[in-house]
Length: 453
Image 1 (cartoon, rainbow, N blue to C red):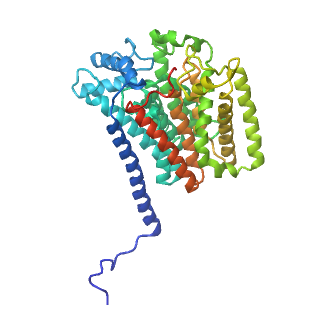
Image 2 (cartoon, rainbow, N blue to C red):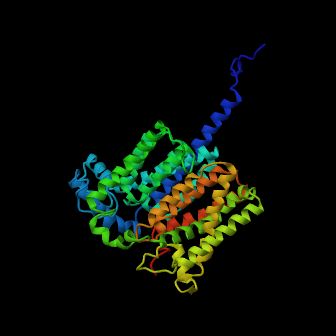
Image 3 (cartoon, rainbow, N blue to C red):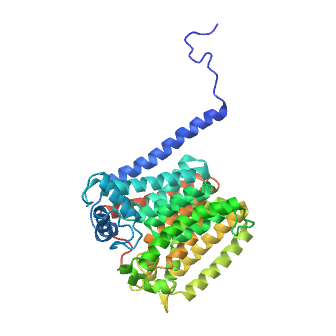
């Protein structure tokens, strides 16, 4: 006879897949909630204090631009530019100020704190979801978000009204869309248009869309529906940049054109040296996660790839000057710090060479992993297109390359096997230290690590 106190009597047990689904959802909510809660605590504990590049950019460039649009909201094209970027971010903040009934936005008003915090929150949420869809492991997805969250080029823009995190949010959204939702062409076109409305430098990334849609580097036999999707995804961002290029008679506002005149007439190859060298630096901790997957490629394939990439890096180093030079924009990066400390041969810094070799080998091995596993490395394609665009401006800063590099490496790591526990702990420790440095930098305890001097 059944026990009347037994509450399980007559209840049909959940199938195994439903139990796993509930467990996965609970773990996912806990992992994402923990990530976003820790980020929020960090932002509000540090606050906006001291002087750093983000606070100075906010005061000199972005608050004046925002407050112009507060007073002249519909002057979207014909306006006095105080920022070299397209004005979408400034217009958005001005719209929030209007809705809040503010006459102007200054340091200390709630939009100055809330909007940067929200941008950072959105970046982490989008990246976590993208990494989770690849790894199908909620805590690993959170781990892959840590390098981005630990960067001062993420944390400082989460405290101040600058365009960096708006650009990073667009990068994360487009990366996620091209990876997981490539058929949503209209949504991706609108997203990319808003992205370049805030920072025009990202426009070349949309060239990756046909590859993401078809899964081919060179799409073949395009049908009418595919062509329509390509137009829907690419035309809106191109139209935005064309409007401003016509209004400005160039790619930047007229009063900023002299800053980039040399790069717009040639190509600033120093930006490529900085990006490749910085990729080499960050590839070292990521090697802890990627080693088991790379090892499967086999010694012969790895050796051949590394030899070819090493020779290409040597060629780049021999052709392109790699010494630190403030006047030519070669400062503001760990790569240029290495160059400043290095013995030199002419205009070539010896310590930069191994960084370039590491970076080139990282790219080569990511390509080989994609070939071995039969996937299109869209994250690498997007990164290379963005880096190509950096050659159109004069500055070779870590500020412009660190977050895209970390997103690229984390996306690749999320695709691959579960790393060993000790390697994940070592990875966590390394970027935990990097996070501590970023917090101290934001709090004014330490200065700019990659300053001019």
